Length: 75
Image 1 (cartoon, rainbow, N blue to C red):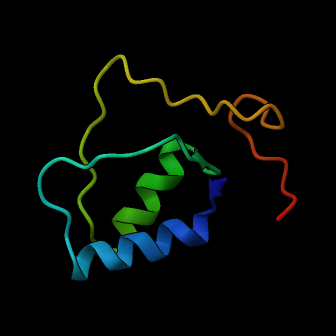
Image 2 (cartoon, helix red, strand yellow; image 1 turned 180 degrees about the horizontal axis):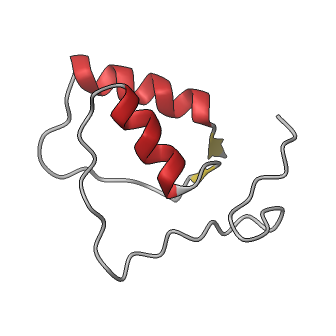
């Protein structure tokens, strides 16, 4: 399963109306089909604050079809 840029835009719009407060439990790991810079741009365009990731946070996508976090556009 994965999250496309258009899904990120929907999540950012929802975050403005229904902000998440506190900690969030996730079960599993979703692939995000966007680079960190692309995610930041989408959220900034929606006026949603993006918090900094820890220095050691691994942003590398683990999907084999990605080469150096570059999506081979197939969607």
